[in-house]
Amino acid sequence: MADTQTADTTQQVTSQIPIASPSQKNPKRVAAGKLIAEKRRQAREEQNKKLAEADAVMAKERLRKAEEEAKKAEAAVVEPPVEDPVVAPTTAPPAESNLTTTQWLSIASIIVSLAAIYYKREELKGTIAKIKAPLAKAPAPVALKEPVLTAPKKKGIPSMD
Image (cartoon, helix red, strand yellow):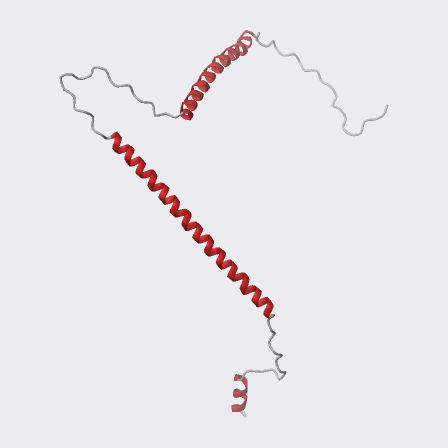
């Protein structure tokens, strides 16, 4: 009897009720889902193609700009004609200004700000001197008299007398 009890505990318990047939998927819904997935995949591919084209255009533009910069640098490096060392120019060539209009405007605004601060400083000095002058001329405090005592006010609801 002991052998049958141990064998019973290891077996799996199954239901005697038959399982209903698995639910059927709606074929129209499945087809619509597949169609939507395909459209999304195609849209992703199109977007990736457009991004690749845009990257190619940007790379060509960068290359063109780099070539232009190289040509400008090459033109600037052209060796000047050899001059006679005995007859050297006595004056230095004028320096070129490489600042843009925006940079010049920002420099001007800084200068104006500094001038305004200097003007305000002078104005504040005068005001502080006027404030300090009356304090220096103020008479020394006279001996304090005894304070006048008054009754404290009552708190609460005032009477309607």
